Length: 446
Image (tube, rainbow, N blue to C red; front, side, top):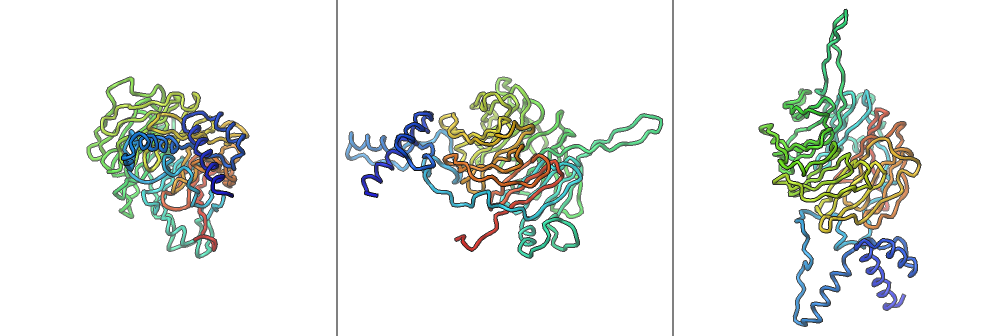
């Protein structure tokens, strides 16, 4: 291809990317089809506008020197990740999620409803409707795979992946019949997270409590601290510094707890709050902001210091209940999923949806909330499709849909979390099983 033809194709891709970025999706698609641009289409990008701005300054003032960042973002960022402002055309370097395999599974006595990795991906926890919580060592899981051991947890093993099993979410009822006795009613563990700095696991349950477990002590199975709520707990997010905890319940108001004192705080402005119960909450990595999702269909962004709402994406999924909302690593974008089986990427600086990831839910509307997530370096977006029992994935930058991965569960996948450090994720299902998925290294890997 001649240099001028290649340059023109690059220019056209910049134009199409700018049109996508500015919200003119249909015009961008029509232009791409007319020009016959190679698939996939360019991702949304503000690069053309920034180049024009620099060129305009240079024409008007030949002595002008462009600064490193001519378009500062409205929100400060902390670490590298998906950045459509600078790396929109970067090719994915991580393996496609359809290449993952199940290398380990653990079984609960009831549906598995929660899962979480710790900050460096070395530990994984699962929570179940049987009120139990399991903590597993990822290195031991990988070691078992290298030794070609069975993927289940049966049989003696000095290096068993499950290093802790915790119990404390249990409600005691009393039967006042003729033969009065106590009945133990096990409550669903809906959410689990690791403390970012200490060996503490935090869980939330239908029993309306938040439990903090010190898992550094081998013999301890009960919580060292309990925070009592009025409604079932749905989601938790810990401040990166470890001092504060956000708690979302079946109520429109999110509470901020001081973990040391158990003192609770909430925004004093009623207009800040959601209109229905909150389904998810998540701190940005620099803790300057946090985001909440709700059954009212709105996504709200909050100031991490004052706990005041600073932005609301109304009817983010056309009125459908929001299942999850997560910041990217650099804090520039928010990834949301809804009960409409659609995943969206929102840009904070412009307060609008940039990319829509579609194709999940084609075989029927989902019945249960499901979270969307990035892989470890934010090359791909992953979302479990409830009806097909498969993992859907897309390239994060251009929404190009990849091959499906059959998850192997016999019931709906109710929880999913990707490792922050490696090509691995955990799924939990109503079939009582939690599956650890991993992309094994191959000889073709660099």
